[in-house]
Length: 278
Image (cartoon, rainbow, N blue to C red; front, side):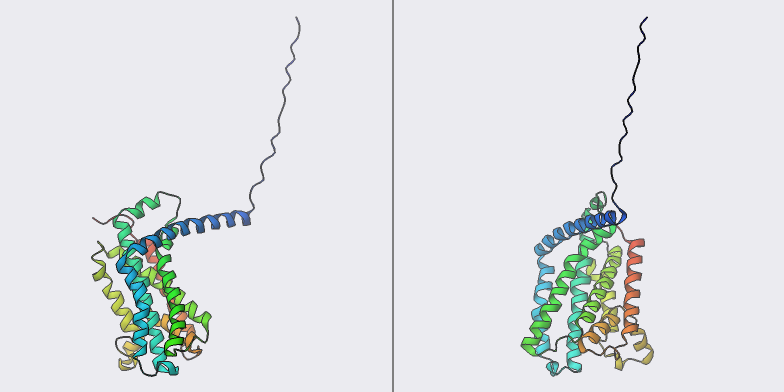
């Protein structure tokens, strides 16, 4: 009988090159930024359709400049100028960042949008960051515009240390974004935001000395006020605007502001509600 010989051919497959660690990290970062920007762009479009929030965002510059024009000595660069700049940044952080992010988070949660977004590729951090991007962007633009317009119209002094001012505003945005998301957890409906936001706004305003000058408070209360959320942020901004960081105790202000930011972010991670309240 003839013998049949079977020849087995072994094919060696060369493994495909894998991305390096740095390349993979860059790819993940690029993907994260792309997802965050896509969500933030959608939020920007929705913000444009919200007449109430857009009125606050767009009319505030006019109101602030009008307020500054009534304060005697604003253009002299003294205490009046410091009060004007503190009022500017404080109002932007409270009514543009805090209130806008709070309202947006509650509205998206009650509509079921946040739950649906969590089923996609975006991470929790990307979703919440995208919620805050429009308000933070508006705040930064308004700060720059008001500084320029204030200098041209009412001789408001320009910042002596712009980087320190920018750092103060950015830290403030993180602080009040965290507080907004924490407050959203306690807000059952969009209508209830007007009530749940009052304690945070009241503490921030009083602690920053906007309602009553801190010099008029008892020493103990004045000391406590230094550790409220808005006070250290305005300390950083004031130090950058006046160019006198030693007088504002920048180290203490920065430490307190960063502590508020970290506590807020930790509370959001542990307690934030993604599903509609029943």
